[in-house]
Image (cartoon, rainbow, N blue to C red; front, side, top):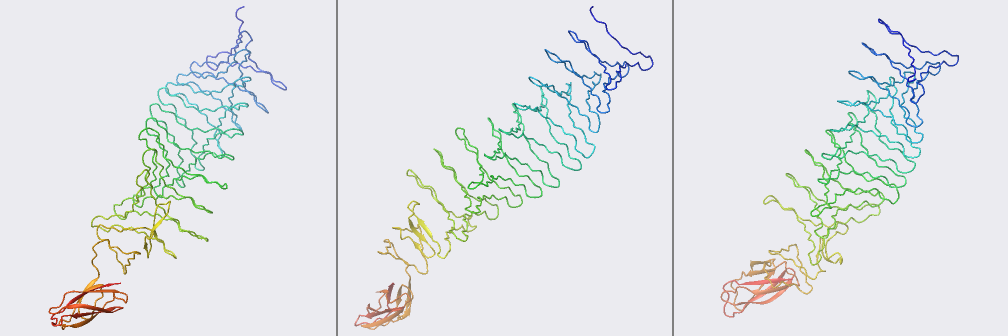
Length: 620
């Protein structure tokens, strides 16, 4: 009336050997064998069914084996199904290993070996109206280290590939598909666990397996992003990201390629490399290095804009910009430095800046300019300087335009150097050309050469007014120093200003002014003869005749290459003779290369008892 009677089936005991077995066997049938059913009775609380193997008091406990029947076509299956519930949660299935004094027992789910090995499937139940059942693989907790979860695909004992492992989120027929999340274990008092995704080393042949991280394609909308990031550090350094490819012992090292996505009808994706931002210190660097080499040239670091095959469209630009300084007082913008590599035993690396070639048109321009100054301050200066040397010559600076060629010819490119003007009454900028100096007593200072170009007509050196009026007021060429366009030209020296040449010509349309200055050092000479040669513009001649009789003339002839038929010859007396009185009487026979002068002792009573002298000046 209270508890129903129980049914017990117990095999016999043995004091010396194995205990008796209990076997429940259904009957054989012509089509299907009879079933064996162990069913708990239905009640307010359903009756339970318990299968327990025997306890081993001194040795191993009894095993429990559930085996489906062998079949000529398909073998029988083993199904374990928990009970259903009409109003609450369905019954669960729990497989728990036995507790052991040293180690608990393991649970093994193994597909049988066959031509094709049997599979093992763990599947959560379908949710007919809401969420499907989940599948959880969780290792046990431990006092030292928590248990591990190992998922290993099958090994291939032949030449075929080993088994694959696939983790796939569930399909979402109307919304997003299920996510796949891999999290390492948390460390509540120390570091969290690491996640390592790596392919195994290759064997004696072949390559190691590749790693592919890729979001799927889409038929509409954006494809999924790929995010690689380290966690923020509240009291330490943020975690770093290292991307490194393997070294090659016989061939080249592995390549690293970062490629933004292409587009068939819009702009291609950007590739951005940024150093980390900082609110209290310096922002992080963004560095690109070519690889080092111990036996050949170091690897190049190349920044190249993308090519464009479209008509009338430029290729992609390369822009290098220092960071803006947006703070308050004295916040400078970031600098840009281009530095060739150092050569410890040979020449340092060069820096070459080339514009792009135009195979059918002009090559690209190169512009080096500082930005305009703001409301205060000066615009930045430009410095082009070669380095100093401890021995040998310092480097040259060459400014040169290319030679014009081609079948149609062309003009050589010009070089223009101009300095800025001054506003509001301030002086315009100076242009200074300074050759190098030499240490005292050690050498000669450098020269400054202004050389016009050669040609069928040689070029000249021109001096012009401001660019707006472009007035030319002076020319220096191989044969001309011409400043006729100027109202006046001054050649001023605090010392001696020397003009020299085979022939110097001074021409003034209204005259030549000596500026009320002392004029001296004319070409002059002296001679002692009645008839002689003196090729000087001016001179003093002393006669050989020392006894000119009273009231007697003396004609002398001077041969002089400075004299021509149109020369103006001026004669004055020098020192007179003793005894008589000599005067200049007449100039005659002025011609090419000579002239004659007549002198007379006008004293009618006394003869000269000494020579006399006279002066001449030839003006052409």
